[in-house]
Image 1: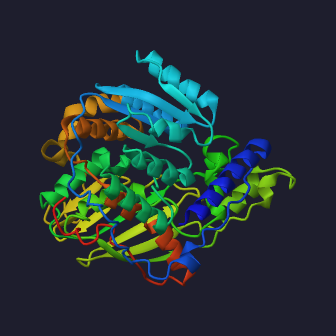
Image 2 (image 1 turned 45 degrees about the vertical axis):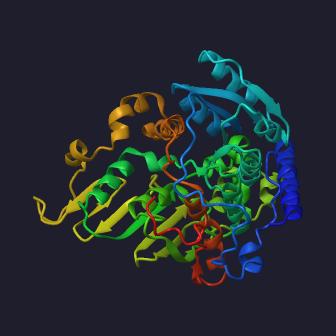
Image 3 (image 1 turned 180 degrees about the vertical axis):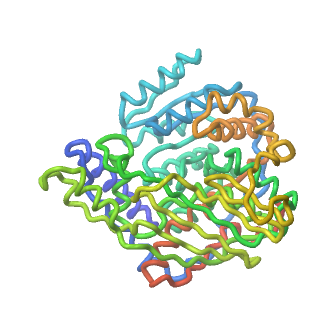
Length: 458
């Protein structure tokens, strides 16, 4: 993506925000044209910039205190702030947002926790002043999606480690820009994927790597979550997230399910995703919800045209010939699920509800509870801080475990659990699925963001 195009996109995003504030509905953002016109060979690997070096296996420097700046203090930003405030050796140095009231709530959270009030940076480009500070070790962003890449690039260019909510980027050009910036600055750029730290996900990861399920053949991952009410609110995510459903037809949110599965399959540690085929159902859910809940055709929400198919399903092949089913649906009534399944030659695990079957187990060919495996395969992180996580953390404690582990890696000066190559590849199904759908479910090759280093140990 050229700098000119990036500036145009940001101007459009800002105009959208202004329109939302005034009218309570979206000004549609321009469609993402990359999938149809700009990318001819999605697996093309650009040359590594001069002087850049791989970030694979690079440890953090030791930090006695981890000093953090937060960009985006809405619901998600303040949720993660709450986790960080419950961890020793953390200092919130600064926060940035376009909404002063939200920043004020974040500042009060810090002072209520006995911490000095962080500096505040207001305005569209306030994050640029935040990342320039010399007392920030890590920049965390929880902004609307279109701002993730600008914040992360600014942080790395200022010499800061950084991390983002998901997805980390929405185009292949931007994902490569993050990889190159991380390698050039020798600073980590992380997808802070909380679902990797869920209790079941970490337990299953140990079962897989201890061989309980045998040789793994395929896995399933998803984000299936009825967000219709949230998407149509006139506040918070309703002010921007629905706009993505007017922009592209594909999987808008791949990482929650895919991140844990990537760990099960040792992606970038002996295997990698090689190509994807994708298809979408018709769009109906958001249109029907609008008809049922938005009165009067004068409401500007009626000018919106939703193009994202309700259910997107993708099949991914890996270099070792293993398969991943990846799905996305936030537009229909259904119980929440990330699928979180894995099949091996000795057995199978499926989640929602959690159940396991091991060949030859007592009771015949019926799923059993996973409780019997907790005593032997509970992850040490959950054993150490699980009680605190359940008390302090969101989403059943996984948010606290994620924040705790990030801080632990920085305090102890060790390699983080994932890196910029994981961040890029876990978000890549967003543009790749759009490319495939637009071309009649044609196979789309995955870029090798590691530039050939995916076979080495993590």
